[in-house]
Image 1 (tube, rainbow, N blue to C red):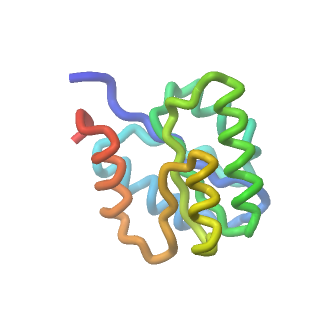
Image 2: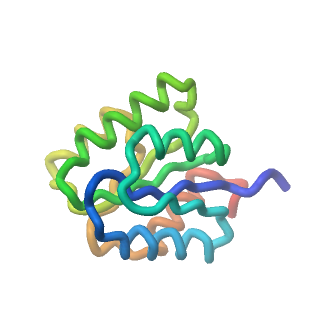
Length: 133
């Protein structure tokens, strides 16, 4: 069996509401993934640094502040600059439907909208890493 799948769950920006991020982190951990939760008020650089240091396979970002276009774009740019585009980025939060295709065009693999069952997120991660299931 290979190394465990590692996921960095991050809460970027100034938004102070992290219950959803913690629920997702717990669901992923309960499903057998290694999860590192970075805590509140992380900058894109801190998130990318953590993902690289932890040898993460995924970054999951929760954004409720409305700054999703800027924050996701910066994370994607930093990953490219650090030659770490193999890290799969997904996210969730209050993100307008019209912005989801724009985020996907930046390289964000998936956006989960409010009300998504946690098992949908777990199943999606498992599908992205067949060896992890």
